[in-house]
Length: 155
Image (cartoon, rainbow, N blue to C red; front, top):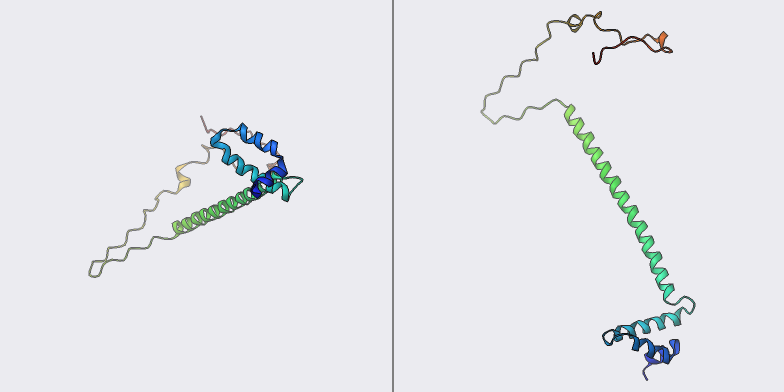
């Protein structure tokens, strides 16, 4: 007898091993025998928990790795949001800068600068009389009361 068979018979009993192997199809017997050998080795190393000890350790490892994955994904999101915010800030700063003229090729005529925008001839206060629109401004003395002036938003 080989040492593997002796190991199986010692852990599970000869009768139980033969019953288990006869219950599976002939195509699955080799895999079943390998599984029984593995289980017997684990049972000898850990007589209390056997395969469940190995399964439990692997489940804890999977949970720890999943927690690490969640933390790494959160960190990646923080970097992406920070990069997006920096891009938006940089873009808004560029938009606030005055446009720079493109360099002209050598020998080209310089274009005349654009004229300034037209000035408004009539002051805005003259366009709308203050008597036609009720005052929205309330003086600081009337903060405690709500104004009853009707403002014609939808009239």
